[in-house]
Image 1 (cartoon, rainbow, N blue to C red):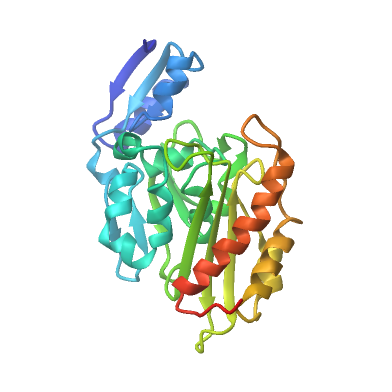
Image 2 (cartoon, rainbow, N blue to C red; image 1 turned 30 degrees about the horizontal axis):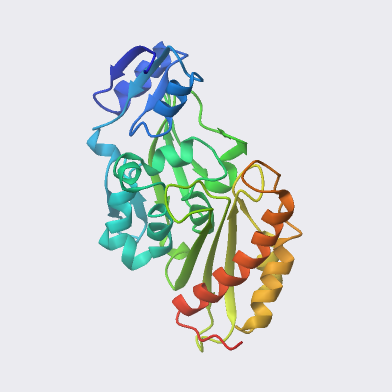
Length: 295
């Protein structure tokens, strides 16, 4: 069923990097929810695998002294969704990963795999974009940090080099403290579904909770890669909360996206979703940030 040429279980991150250097064709595997499907379909038939599964330094969620939240890339969706720190500080991300596939997939699928496969439909991607996540890569000679805004290079492609291992996803305190967020996934069914479109909104309100101090708008499947709508974000700063804000977000976002037609949905339908999900997500994000919403 699975045509695997070689399988190597790395003992730690350094061992995994060494194995990747020695085998230029090797593929990293952790939970396997994406890689094993590609092997079964024949896209990676006969490949060599370097497993990072079980490497403890790549698992778990913690907070540094300055409030930076650090998520290990081998942390499963289920772990993230049920983690107290995530639920308290960035529940939008927990809600997003809890929409991936079904329970079986969420119990094995990892956030690192979701990011490293580079697909625009990844449920975690638009939320991580709104949180200005930083991805830490370890290679044979150095460690580098890549802002998620520079991570995606095209459909299914990222800046990660073959001999690098993702070791952490970092979210600074300034990118979540005081914000309320919301993620909406649209699909033809409520579970076991790849997103037709995903929308994440993160909002910080003024002290009186009536106006937008900062708004971040991210989409998945609205372009070849997950995107942030920076022009829209700038245009609505200072606006009062309410239906006029939602209308402005939805309409403006249409000018920044570039969805395609596929067997899942037409470009035209996805454009309709961009506007509608943007409107709905900003309303709930405002409410989650402690604001009120007047129609």
